[in-house]
Length: 432
Ligand code: NDP
Image 1 (cartoon, rainbow, N blue to C red):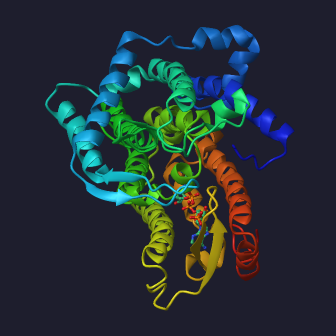
Image 2: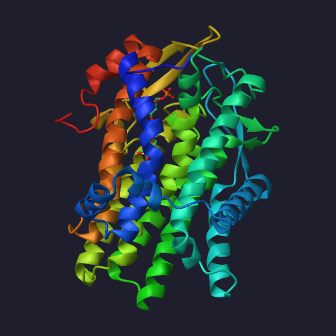
Image 3: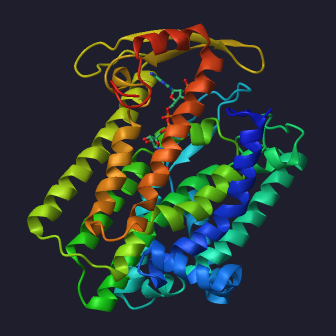
Protein backbone atom coordinates (compact mmCIF):
# COMPACT_ATOMS: atom_id res chain seq x y z
CA UNK A 1 0.00 0.00 0.00
CA UNK A 2 1.50 3.35 -1.00
CA UNK A 3 1.71 5.63 2.04
CA UNK A 4 0.70 9.25 1.84
CA UNK A 5 1.97 11.69 4.44
CA UNK A 6 -0.29 14.62 3.61
CA UNK A 7 -4.10 14.55 3.57
CA UNK A 8 -5.63 12.75 0.52
CA UNK A 9 -6.79 16.01 -1.06
CA UNK A 10 -3.32 17.62 -0.76
CA UNK A 11 -1.75 14.41 -2.06
CA UNK A 12 -4.00 14.32 -5.14
CA UNK A 13 -3.63 18.03 -5.81
CA UNK A 14 0.16 17.94 -5.53
CA UNK A 15 0.47 14.76 -7.61
CA UNK A 16 -1.72 16.03 -10.42
CA UNK A 17 -0.10 19.45 -10.46
CA UNK A 18 3.41 17.93 -10.53
CA UNK A 19 2.38 15.59 -13.36
CA UNK A 20 0.89 18.51 -15.32
CA UNK A 21 3.36 21.31 -14.58
CA UNK A 22 6.81 19.69 -14.31
CA UNK A 23 7.19 18.91 -18.05
CA UNK A 24 6.37 22.46 -19.27
CA UNK A 25 8.46 23.90 -16.46
CA UNK A 26 11.56 22.00 -17.65
CA UNK A 27 11.15 23.56 -21.10
CA UNK A 28 10.41 27.02 -19.65
CA UNK A 29 13.49 26.93 -17.44
CA UNK A 30 15.71 25.89 -20.35
CA UNK A 31 14.17 28.59 -22.56
CA UNK A 32 14.60 31.28 -19.90
CA UNK A 33 18.22 30.29 -19.19
CA UNK A 34 19.36 29.88 -22.78
CA UNK A 35 17.19 32.35 -24.72
CA UNK A 36 15.91 34.95 -22.21
CA UNK A 37 19.09 35.73 -20.23
CA UNK A 38 17.77 33.83 -17.19
CA UNK A 39 15.32 36.68 -16.65
CA UNK A 40 11.91 35.92 -15.13
CA UNK A 41 10.45 39.27 -16.24
CA UNK A 42 11.67 38.87 -19.82
CA UNK A 43 10.26 35.32 -19.97
CA UNK A 44 7.01 36.45 -18.38
CA UNK A 45 6.82 39.30 -20.92
CA UNK A 46 7.18 36.81 -23.76
CA UNK A 47 4.26 34.74 -22.46
CA UNK A 48 2.20 37.83 -21.74
CA UNK A 49 2.46 38.65 -25.44
CA UNK A 50 2.21 35.14 -26.86
CA UNK A 51 0.07 33.20 -24.37
CA UNK A 52 -0.07 29.39 -24.37
CA UNK A 53 0.66 29.40 -28.11
CA UNK A 54 4.03 30.92 -27.13
CA UNK A 55 4.85 27.83 -25.06
CA UNK A 56 3.81 25.53 -27.92
CA UNK A 57 5.98 27.54 -30.32
CA UNK A 58 9.11 27.45 -28.17
CA UNK A 59 8.70 23.77 -27.16
CA UNK A 60 11.48 22.05 -29.14
CA UNK A 61 10.43 18.90 -30.98
CA UNK A 62 12.56 15.85 -30.10
CA UNK A 63 14.93 15.48 -33.06
CA UNK A 64 16.82 12.45 -34.33
CA UNK A 65 20.11 13.81 -32.98
CA UNK A 66 18.53 14.28 -29.53
CA UNK A 67 17.31 10.66 -29.49
CA UNK A 68 20.73 9.47 -30.74
CA UNK A 69 22.57 11.33 -27.95
CA UNK A 70 20.20 9.98 -25.28
CA UNK A 71 20.32 6.44 -26.68
CA UNK A 72 24.15 6.32 -26.94
CA UNK A 73 24.54 7.78 -23.44
CA UNK A 74 21.90 5.48 -21.87
CA UNK A 75 23.24 2.35 -23.61
CA UNK A 76 26.82 3.21 -22.59
CA UNK A 77 25.81 3.69 -18.94
CA UNK A 78 23.74 0.49 -18.93
CA UNK A 79 26.70 -1.44 -20.37
CA UNK A 80 29.06 -0.01 -17.73
CA UNK A 81 26.59 -0.89 -14.98
CA UNK A 82 26.37 -4.49 -16.18
CA UNK A 83 29.96 -5.14 -17.26
CA UNK A 84 32.36 -3.23 -15.01
CA UNK A 85 33.62 -5.27 -12.06
CA UNK A 86 32.60 -4.27 -8.52
CA UNK A 87 32.31 -5.57 -4.98
CA UNK A 88 29.12 -7.41 -4.00
CA UNK A 89 27.12 -5.15 -1.66
CA UNK A 90 23.96 -5.95 0.26
CA UNK A 91 21.26 -3.31 0.68
CA UNK A 92 19.12 -2.91 3.82
CA UNK A 93 16.36 -5.40 4.65
CA UNK A 94 13.26 -4.38 2.72
CA UNK A 95 9.77 -4.02 4.28
CA UNK A 96 8.91 -7.50 2.94
CA UNK A 97 12.08 -8.91 4.53
CA UNK A 98 14.23 -9.19 1.35
CA UNK A 99 17.84 -8.07 1.06
CA UNK A 100 18.72 -6.67 -2.39
CA UNK A 101 22.23 -7.35 -3.70
CA UNK A 102 24.19 -4.87 -5.85
CA UNK A 103 27.48 -4.62 -7.73
CA UNK A 104 29.35 -1.53 -6.47
CA UNK A 105 31.01 -0.27 -9.66
CA UNK A 106 29.81 3.35 -9.56
CA UNK A 107 33.23 5.00 -9.13
CA UNK A 108 34.63 3.04 -12.08
CA UNK A 109 31.58 3.92 -14.21
CA UNK A 110 31.95 7.59 -13.26
CA UNK A 111 35.62 7.85 -14.21
CA UNK A 112 35.19 5.79 -17.39
CA UNK A 113 32.28 8.07 -18.41
CA UNK A 114 34.17 11.33 -17.83
CA UNK A 115 37.39 10.00 -19.41
CA UNK A 116 35.46 8.78 -22.47
CA UNK A 117 33.56 12.06 -22.84
CA UNK A 118 36.68 14.21 -22.50
CA UNK A 119 38.60 11.78 -24.74
CA UNK A 120 35.96 12.05 -27.49
CA UNK A 121 36.28 15.85 -27.30
CA UNK A 122 40.08 15.91 -27.10
CA UNK A 123 40.52 13.66 -30.13
CA UNK A 124 37.89 15.59 -32.12
CA UNK A 125 35.49 12.63 -32.35
CA UNK A 126 32.52 14.32 -30.65
CA UNK A 127 32.12 17.95 -29.60
CA UNK A 128 30.20 18.20 -26.26
CA UNK A 129 29.04 21.69 -27.32
CA UNK A 130 26.62 19.83 -29.65
CA UNK A 131 24.80 18.60 -26.53
CA UNK A 132 24.32 22.21 -25.38
CA UNK A 133 23.21 23.27 -28.88
CA UNK A 134 20.49 20.59 -28.84
CA UNK A 135 19.67 20.82 -25.14
CA UNK A 136 16.02 21.85 -25.60
CA UNK A 137 15.40 18.95 -28.00
CA UNK A 138 17.17 16.56 -25.61
CA UNK A 139 15.04 17.70 -22.64
CA UNK A 140 11.92 17.42 -24.79
CA UNK A 141 12.83 13.86 -25.84
CA UNK A 142 13.64 13.00 -22.21
CA UNK A 143 10.25 14.34 -21.05
CA UNK A 144 8.31 12.10 -23.44
CA UNK A 145 10.67 9.11 -23.34
CA UNK A 146 10.75 9.03 -19.53
CA UNK A 147 6.97 9.29 -19.32
CA UNK A 148 6.70 6.16 -21.50
CA UNK A 149 9.40 4.53 -19.36
CA UNK A 150 7.26 5.18 -16.23
CA UNK A 151 4.20 3.69 -17.96
CA UNK A 152 6.26 0.55 -18.70
CA UNK A 153 7.36 0.43 -15.05
CA UNK A 154 3.71 0.61 -14.00
CA UNK A 155 2.80 -2.25 -16.37
CA UNK A 156 5.80 -4.30 -15.17
CA UNK A 157 4.69 -3.75 -11.57
CA UNK A 158 1.33 -5.32 -12.47
CA UNK A 159 2.37 -8.18 -14.70
CA UNK A 160 5.96 -9.10 -13.80
CA UNK A 161 7.16 -7.71 -10.45
CA UNK A 162 10.74 -8.66 -9.61
CA UNK A 163 10.01 -9.41 -5.92
CA UNK A 164 7.24 -9.32 -3.33
CA UNK A 165 8.31 -5.74 -2.42
CA UNK A 166 5.64 -4.58 -4.81
CA UNK A 167 1.93 -3.95 -4.85
CA UNK A 168 -0.95 -1.78 -5.89
CA UNK A 169 -2.91 0.57 -3.63
CA UNK A 170 -5.87 0.14 -5.96
CA UNK A 171 -5.60 3.66 -7.38
CA UNK A 172 -4.10 4.03 -10.85
CA UNK A 173 -2.81 7.59 -10.37
CA UNK A 174 -1.15 6.87 -7.01
CA UNK A 175 0.36 3.65 -8.36
CA UNK A 176 1.76 5.48 -11.38
CA UNK A 177 3.00 8.45 -9.37
CA UNK A 178 4.55 6.67 -6.35
CA UNK A 179 5.34 3.45 -8.22
CA UNK A 180 4.56 -0.17 -7.55
CA UNK A 181 7.90 -1.96 -7.22
CA UNK A 182 10.57 -1.11 -4.67
CA UNK A 183 13.35 -3.04 -6.43
CA UNK A 184 12.42 -3.51 -10.10
CA UNK A 185 15.06 -5.40 -12.08
CA UNK A 186 15.63 -6.64 -15.61
CA UNK A 187 16.83 -10.19 -15.17
CA UNK A 188 18.58 -10.87 -11.88
CA UNK A 189 21.31 -8.24 -12.05
CA UNK A 190 20.16 -5.09 -13.83
CA UNK A 191 18.68 -2.87 -11.14
CA UNK A 192 16.41 -0.26 -12.75
CA UNK A 193 16.59 2.29 -9.91
CA UNK A 194 20.40 2.16 -9.84
CA UNK A 195 20.25 2.93 -13.56
CA UNK A 196 17.67 5.75 -13.42
CA UNK A 197 18.85 7.43 -10.22
CA UNK A 198 22.61 6.92 -10.32
CA UNK A 199 23.95 5.95 -13.70
CA UNK A 200 21.60 8.06 -15.83
CA UNK A 201 20.48 10.90 -13.55
CA UNK A 202 23.46 11.66 -11.31
CA UNK A 203 25.93 10.84 -14.10
CA UNK A 204 24.18 13.29 -16.45
CA UNK A 205 24.79 16.01 -13.85
CA UNK A 206 28.59 15.58 -14.18
CA UNK A 207 28.43 15.16 -17.96
CA UNK A 208 26.36 18.33 -18.38
CA UNK A 209 28.56 20.31 -15.95
CA UNK A 210 31.54 19.51 -18.21
CA UNK A 211 29.43 20.27 -21.31
CA UNK A 212 28.55 23.77 -20.06
CA UNK A 213 32.18 24.51 -19.31
CA UNK A 214 33.28 23.40 -22.79
CA UNK A 215 30.49 25.41 -24.41
CA UNK A 216 31.56 28.57 -22.60
CA UNK A 217 35.13 27.93 -23.76
CA UNK A 218 33.86 27.54 -27.34
CA UNK A 219 31.92 30.84 -27.16
CA UNK A 220 34.51 33.01 -25.38
CA UNK A 221 37.81 31.23 -25.98
CA UNK A 222 38.22 30.96 -22.18
CA UNK A 223 36.40 29.73 -19.10
CA UNK A 224 35.43 32.34 -16.49
CA UNK A 225 36.41 31.77 -12.86
CA UNK A 226 32.69 31.70 -11.90
CA UNK A 227 32.11 28.83 -14.33
CA UNK A 228 35.21 27.05 -13.01
CA UNK A 229 34.02 27.29 -9.38
CA UNK A 230 30.55 26.10 -10.38
CA UNK A 231 31.86 23.15 -12.42
CA UNK A 232 34.46 22.08 -9.84
CA UNK A 233 31.92 22.16 -6.99
CA UNK A 234 29.29 20.24 -8.95
CA UNK A 235 31.94 17.67 -9.98
CA UNK A 236 33.19 17.32 -6.38
CA UNK A 237 29.58 16.76 -5.30
CA UNK A 238 28.91 14.11 -7.97
CA UNK A 239 32.30 12.45 -7.28
CA UNK A 240 31.30 12.28 -3.61
CA UNK A 241 28.00 10.77 -4.65
CA UNK A 242 29.64 7.94 -6.61
CA UNK A 243 32.25 7.39 -3.90
CA UNK A 244 29.34 6.88 -1.50
CA UNK A 245 26.95 5.22 -4.00
CA UNK A 246 26.64 1.98 -2.03
CA UNK A 247 25.57 4.15 0.94
CA UNK A 248 22.95 5.82 -1.27
CA UNK A 249 21.40 2.36 -1.73
CA UNK A 250 20.47 2.54 1.99
CA UNK A 251 18.64 5.86 1.69
CA UNK A 252 14.96 6.75 1.27
CA UNK A 253 15.19 7.06 -2.54
CA UNK A 254 16.17 3.42 -2.90
CA UNK A 255 15.03 1.69 0.28
CA UNK A 256 11.61 3.34 0.69
CA UNK A 257 10.46 5.21 -2.44
CA UNK A 258 9.05 2.92 -5.09
CA UNK A 259 9.97 3.14 -8.76
CA UNK A 260 7.32 5.47 -10.18
CA UNK A 261 6.96 8.86 -11.82
CA UNK A 262 8.06 10.73 -8.66
CA UNK A 263 11.49 9.19 -8.37
CA UNK A 264 12.24 7.83 -11.86
CA UNK A 265 10.94 10.67 -14.01
CA UNK A 266 12.56 13.02 -11.50
CA UNK A 267 15.98 11.39 -11.94
CA UNK A 268 15.72 10.98 -15.71
CA UNK A 269 14.46 14.50 -16.50
CA UNK A 270 14.49 16.82 -13.47
CA UNK A 271 18.11 16.08 -12.45
CA UNK A 272 19.67 16.76 -15.90
CA UNK A 273 17.51 19.85 -16.51
CA UNK A 274 16.92 21.54 -13.14
CA UNK A 275 19.87 20.34 -11.01
CA UNK A 276 22.37 21.46 -13.63
CA UNK A 277 20.60 24.78 -14.27
CA UNK A 278 23.09 27.09 -12.45
CA UNK A 279 25.79 25.89 -14.89
CA UNK A 280 23.38 26.22 -17.82
CA UNK A 281 22.83 29.85 -16.82
CA UNK A 282 26.54 30.62 -16.51
CA UNK A 283 27.31 29.53 -20.11
CA UNK A 284 25.99 32.85 -21.48
CA UNK A 285 26.60 34.90 -18.33
CA UNK A 286 30.27 34.63 -17.42
CA UNK A 287 31.17 36.54 -14.24
CA UNK A 288 34.76 37.32 -13.25
CA UNK A 289 34.92 36.94 -9.48
CA UNK A 290 38.62 37.49 -9.01
CA UNK A 291 40.93 34.82 -7.61
CA UNK A 292 40.38 35.59 -3.93
CA UNK A 293 36.56 35.52 -3.96
CA UNK A 294 36.58 32.47 -6.25
CA UNK A 295 38.81 30.60 -3.79
CA UNK A 296 36.65 31.59 -0.78
CA UNK A 297 33.51 30.29 -2.49
CA UNK A 298 35.27 27.13 -3.62
CA UNK A 299 36.60 26.35 -0.13
CA UNK A 300 33.22 27.06 1.52
CA UNK A 301 31.47 24.80 -1.03
CA UNK A 302 33.96 21.95 -0.58
CA UNK A 303 33.60 22.22 3.22
CA UNK A 304 29.80 21.90 2.97
CA UNK A 305 30.05 18.94 0.60
CA UNK A 306 32.48 17.31 3.05
CA UNK A 307 30.17 17.87 6.06
CA UNK A 308 27.22 16.45 4.13
CA UNK A 309 29.33 13.42 3.21
CA UNK A 310 30.51 13.01 6.81
CA UNK A 311 26.90 13.04 8.14
CA UNK A 312 25.95 10.20 5.76
CA UNK A 313 29.20 8.34 6.48
CA UNK A 314 28.71 8.66 10.26
CA UNK A 315 25.21 7.17 10.17
CA UNK A 316 26.22 4.35 7.87
CA UNK A 317 29.41 3.48 9.75
CA UNK A 318 27.38 3.44 12.96
CA UNK A 319 24.83 1.05 11.45
CA UNK A 320 27.50 -1.12 9.72
CA UNK A 321 29.45 -1.67 12.94
CA UNK A 322 26.28 -2.13 14.99
CA UNK A 323 27.17 0.94 17.06
CA UNK A 324 30.73 -0.29 17.77
CA UNK A 325 32.53 2.71 16.32
CA UNK A 326 33.69 6.13 17.45
CA UNK A 327 31.55 9.18 16.76
CA UNK A 328 33.48 12.44 17.09
CA UNK A 329 36.10 10.51 19.09
CA UNK A 330 33.69 8.93 21.58
CA UNK A 331 31.48 5.88 21.90
CA UNK A 332 28.18 6.84 20.23
CA UNK A 333 25.00 7.42 22.21
CA UNK A 334 22.10 5.47 20.74
CA UNK A 335 18.57 4.12 21.00
CA UNK A 336 17.93 0.43 20.34
CA UNK A 337 14.62 0.50 18.46
CA UNK A 338 12.50 -2.49 17.51
CA UNK A 339 9.95 -2.61 14.70
CA UNK A 340 7.80 -5.10 12.81
CA UNK A 341 8.23 -5.84 9.07
CA UNK A 342 5.20 -6.19 6.76
CA UNK A 343 5.65 -9.96 6.98
CA UNK A 344 5.22 -9.76 10.79
CA UNK A 345 8.83 -10.37 11.86
CA UNK A 346 10.24 -8.30 14.73
CA UNK A 347 13.64 -6.70 14.05
CA UNK A 348 15.85 -4.21 15.82
CA UNK A 349 17.62 -1.16 14.47
CA UNK A 350 19.96 1.39 16.04
CA UNK A 351 19.29 5.13 16.08
CA UNK A 352 22.35 7.33 16.54
CA UNK A 353 21.76 10.23 18.94
CA UNK A 354 25.22 11.82 19.01
CA UNK A 355 27.55 13.40 16.43
CA UNK A 356 25.80 15.14 13.51
CA UNK A 357 22.68 13.06 14.26
CA UNK A 358 22.52 14.52 17.78
CA UNK A 359 22.39 18.12 16.44
CA UNK A 360 19.10 17.65 14.58
CA UNK A 361 17.25 14.69 13.11
CA UNK A 362 18.03 15.76 9.53
CA UNK A 363 20.98 18.09 10.03
CA UNK A 364 22.64 16.65 6.89
CA UNK A 365 20.22 18.70 4.76
CA UNK A 366 21.80 21.97 5.95
CA UNK A 367 25.21 21.41 4.27
CA UNK A 368 23.38 19.89 1.26
CA UNK A 369 21.46 23.16 0.73
CA UNK A 370 24.53 25.32 1.44
CA UNK A 371 26.63 23.36 -1.10
CA UNK A 372 24.02 24.16 -3.77
CA UNK A 373 24.11 27.80 -2.71
CA UNK A 374 27.90 27.92 -3.07
CA UNK A 375 27.93 26.50 -6.59
CA UNK A 376 25.21 28.99 -7.59
CA UNK A 377 26.55 32.13 -5.95
CA UNK A 378 29.35 32.55 -8.55
CA UNK A 379 26.48 33.77 -10.81
CA UNK A 380 26.08 36.65 -8.31
CA UNK A 381 22.63 38.22 -8.02
CA UNK A 382 21.68 39.58 -11.43
CA UNK A 383 19.02 36.96 -12.03
CA UNK A 384 16.95 35.16 -9.46
CA UNK A 385 16.35 32.17 -11.75
CA UNK A 386 19.93 30.93 -11.31
CA UNK A 387 18.85 30.20 -7.69
CA UNK A 388 15.84 28.14 -8.68
CA UNK A 389 17.59 24.86 -7.82
CA UNK A 390 18.61 26.09 -4.35
CA UNK A 391 15.02 27.15 -3.60
CA UNK A 392 13.58 23.95 -5.03
CA UNK A 393 16.06 21.85 -3.01
CA UNK A 394 15.18 23.68 0.22
CA UNK A 395 11.46 22.98 -0.28
CA UNK A 396 12.17 19.37 -1.31
CA UNK A 397 14.35 18.65 1.73
CA UNK A 398 12.01 20.30 4.24
CA UNK A 399 9.17 18.19 2.82
CA UNK A 400 11.41 15.11 2.79
CA UNK A 401 12.34 15.62 6.45
CA UNK A 402 8.65 15.63 7.31
CA UNK A 403 7.95 12.54 5.17
CA UNK A 404 10.90 10.74 6.75
CA UNK A 405 9.91 11.72 10.31
CA UNK A 406 6.36 10.49 9.72
CA UNK A 407 7.58 7.24 8.19
CA UNK A 408 10.04 6.62 11.05
CA UNK A 409 7.35 7.46 13.63
CA UNK A 410 5.07 4.80 12.19
CA UNK A 411 7.99 2.34 11.87
CA UNK A 412 9.56 2.80 15.32
CA UNK A 413 6.62 4.15 17.40
CA UNK A 414 7.69 4.92 20.99
CA UNK A 415 11.40 4.64 20.10
CA UNK A 416 11.07 7.46 17.56
CA UNK A 417 9.23 9.51 20.18
CA UNK A 418 12.18 8.95 22.48
CA UNK A 419 14.58 10.05 19.72
CA UNK A 420 12.51 13.23 19.16
CA UNK A 421 12.68 13.96 22.90
CA UNK A 422 16.47 13.54 22.87
CA UNK A 423 17.05 15.34 19.57
CA UNK A 424 14.39 18.04 19.50
CA UNK A 425 15.02 19.80 16.21
CA UNK A 426 14.11 18.45 12.79
CA UNK A 427 16.70 20.23 10.57
CA UNK A 428 18.23 23.41 11.97
CA UNK A 429 19.52 23.11 15.57
CA UNK A 430 17.80 25.60 17.87
CA UNK A 431 15.43 26.86 15.17
CA UNK A 432 13.40 24.16 13.40
P1 NDP B 1 18.79 9.02 4.72
O1 NDP B 1 18.01 7.90 4.10
O2 NDP B 1 20.25 8.97 4.58
O3 NDP B 1 18.41 9.09 6.23
C1 NDP B 1 17.12 8.86 6.66
C2 NDP B 1 16.96 7.41 7.15
O4 NDP B 1 18.00 7.10 8.08
C3 NDP B 1 15.67 7.21 7.90
O5 NDP B 1 14.63 6.87 7.02
C4 NDP B 1 16.02 6.06 8.84
O6 NDP B 1 15.95 4.86 8.08
C5 NDP B 1 17.49 6.31 9.16
N1 NDP B 1 17.71 7.13 10.32
C6 NDP B 1 17.06 8.25 10.71
N2 NDP B 1 17.58 8.75 11.82
C7 NDP B 1 18.60 7.95 12.15
C8 NDP B 1 19.53 7.94 13.22
N3 NDP B 1 19.50 8.86 14.16
N4 NDP B 1 20.44 6.96 13.28
C9 NDP B 1 20.49 6.00 12.33
N5 NDP B 1 19.63 5.96 11.29
C10 NDP B 1 18.69 6.91 11.19
O7 NDP B 1 18.28 10.42 4.22
P2 NDP B 1 18.13 10.93 2.75
O8 NDP B 1 17.91 9.84 1.76
O9 NDP B 1 17.13 11.99 2.81
O10 NDP B 1 19.56 11.60 2.45
C11 NDP B 1 20.69 10.89 1.98
C12 NDP B 1 21.63 11.87 1.29
O11 NDP B 1 21.10 12.31 0.04
C13 NDP B 1 21.89 13.14 2.10
O12 NDP B 1 23.23 13.53 1.92
C14 NDP B 1 20.99 14.16 1.47
O13 NDP B 1 21.45 15.44 1.68
C15 NDP B 1 21.04 13.72 0.01
N6 NDP B 1 19.84 14.09 -0.72
C16 NDP B 1 19.97 14.91 -1.81
C17 NDP B 1 18.87 15.29 -2.54
C18 NDP B 1 18.99 16.15 -3.74
O14 NDP B 1 18.02 16.26 -4.48
N7 NDP B 1 20.11 16.80 -3.96
C19 NDP B 1 17.51 14.78 -2.20
C20 NDP B 1 17.52 13.93 -1.04
C21 NDP B 1 18.62 13.60 -0.34
P3 NDP B 1 15.77 3.39 8.72
O15 NDP B 1 14.43 2.92 8.26
O16 NDP B 1 16.91 2.61 8.14
O17 NDP B 1 15.85 3.53 10.21
